Length: 70
Ligand SMILES: [Zn+2]
Image 1 (cartoon, rainbow, N blue to C red):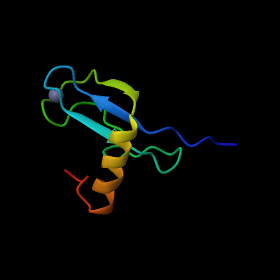
Image 2 (image 1 turned 180 degrees about the vertical axis):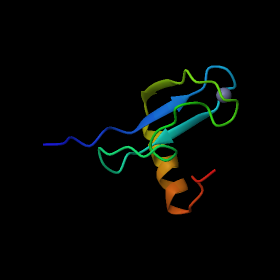
Image 3 (image 1 turned 30 degrees about the vertical axis):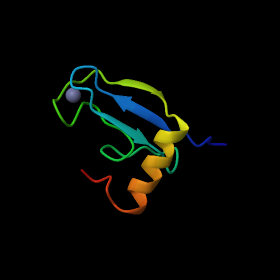
Image 4 (image 1 turned 135 degrees about the horizontal axis):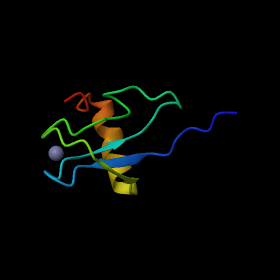
């Protein structure tokens, strides 16, 4: 039985880009639920950690308003 992944935040240690991701299922979609590298500077070793409540809330708001496509 698949377990939905927990929300997490990807951080770029080089340019400090970060994005909180709320997976909709266990099927991750590149560019929406997962990034292989930083979309800002191209650094490909992103740090991944559990998202805080504040970050989850913000990510949900961005998703509602369609602000998470850039
Ligand atoms: Zn970066």
